[in-house]
Length: 361
Image (tube, rainbow, N blue to C red; front, side, top):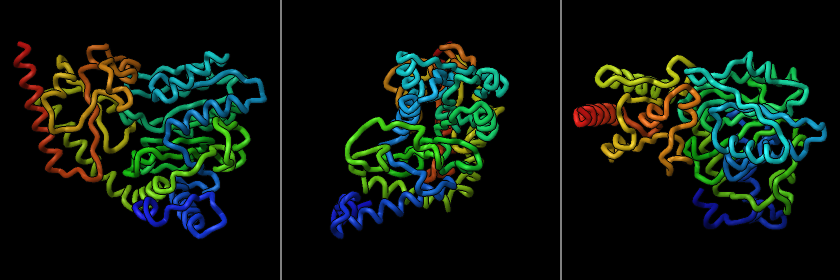
């Protein structure tokens, strides 16, 4: 990224000089790298400031472009706030939203989805992988149902890209949102995949400039886009081996804590991301536990809601009480994590939980 902050400072839309040409070539390469990781065509990738903007563009853009008169949307109770808050906005503008429940493992019922679909359904938004539990939704099966109903299928694939095999055309999705920072790229850049032939199904949310074929105008963040592309290229090489290793370490961490302090592994019976776990420590206040773990970067829920101490809507949708949800921690392992760090984390968490239970007696 560094050269595009310094000597190669051109605007990718400036087509009359070499500085612009250099920036345009860099963006074209990055678009190809992002597309390659998900099996898309570069022409199907539209750069945004991140997944939140991409999801807003997809949801509101589909409703703005809606000439069919359809007024029904479907999502799940465990979706990210970027989807929930946008659906709440659309409800105020006359759209009806069905929030599918999930079972104790965090999975939707395909039969309930089928029952919810109707001739009035414009779009279904269901994430590829949950950001708090790592639970995966069966995208191909969902796509088959939405296609039969004549509805668009949007997936928030932010957590999945670069972590598990994810192919937009094989999965059957029409629209998909991503953030670069979830696969070691820079913060503040992301993308929206729009299946070929579906661009007219979306109306832009901003205007002026005509960049990204008019769907997302504004001067492109060239350094961020370059970083996003490189991160995708690295992930394409490293993903499989990385996932296998992190899955083993996650299983070790879960086993150690289950054996010594007793935990509930949320979503354990469902297909999950390989690097993430969500654990409930019965009788333990999660905030107090975090305060005893100053050397570990953990959370009680999603980063976008961690400023407020409230129960995770994902865990309560899975049947947890507010108390149990607040007794839960989300733990993620990453490319730079070492096994020694995993061992240390397990021992540190175990000691803290045991101490809090002694103090509570």
